[in-house]
Image 1 (cartoon, helix red, strand yellow):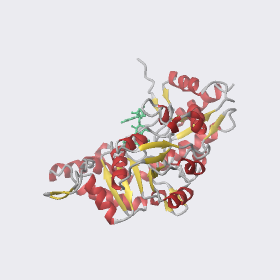
Image 2 (spheres, helix red, strand yellow; image 1 turned 90 degrees about the horizontal axis):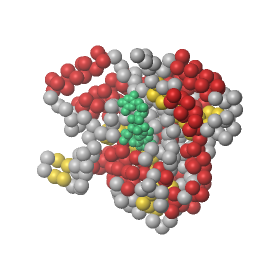
Image 3 (cartoon, helix red, strand yellow; image 1 turned 120 degrees about the horizontal axis):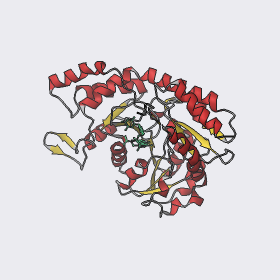
Image 4 (cartoon, protein in one colour; image 1 turned 60 degrees about the horizontal axis):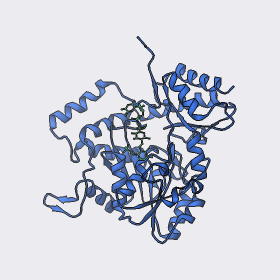
Length: 372
Ligand code: T4K
């Protein structure tokens, strides 16, 4: 029997099951399973405190939260966005009948390059949807300056940016709205889940209505909302996770530091800048496997896989390369040269609490051995 345990790109952090029992008992006792129950309310409060934001609305997942964020701001027409992201970013536009316009990324941050955004603006542009990719903060000031000059809204896809701080506090304070994902693969997870961060009580109220079918009271529906509510069991799990958030972040940092030490000075391997930053939440560990490395990115991916190590090529292919988006005028590779190159070189290595030093050393040795 093969006793080797596969190593995945991530593994969810799971506290001791016994710690979850009291929450389950409380749910069973109250029979309140969903629709803004006690745990839902408590998680909103505790997340506001933890993240340093004023208003948060919990959702069943990050994708529905993105769809609702665009609805809440009444965005139509065209929206400028990054092709270097998970497909949900662009799908959320299309679910609102919005035309996506892709703009190229910066080679270091791997986020939308503000200098390229302006030339993508047309008379139909209504908003910018940047992504804090891997939790790396976007150039929020430059983006806001462009948005203000052209009267555009800014919605940040902050799916990877849980707990990320910038010069003025939480990165989630920027833009009109920010959207988080609490999916099982994220650093803070509620099995499935997500949230919208807003900045006024009126906007929070509107978002809360939209995620609850448009109801304002028992008999009044004011708009065509959707069901995006987070259940009590997910919210309870979030409360428990939050108790362990500090140790999760610190364990991830330790993994990143071991990789940083082991992978430096390997010919052709570039460690993404965010991995080296003290501010990083280390939600991913991306490296670039460049032309100067002895084998290709895909060969390294396969080599690791043959050893039961499942790295991931986040985000390859680019969103602009998927069949439903590849014919858009902004999808041509000549419009997206940096994103195209990075998508062909990027490899996200396994990172999660509990990933042992022996596993990290093995991954580093394989990468070293394949370099020469
Ligand atoms: N915006 C951005 C920028 C995003 O990255 C995402 C999601 C969204 C928006 C949308 O948010 P959500 O609607 O998902 O809340 C995963 C996740 O499903 C997705 O949430 C995430 N981004 C994306 C980057 O990654 P897959 O298809 O790569 O996941 P999967 O199932 O292959 O999982 C990766 C590895 O994780 C597995 O090999 C094993 C491990 N794993 C996974 C799950 C689900 C576990 O150990 N346990 C688990 O329960 O998309």
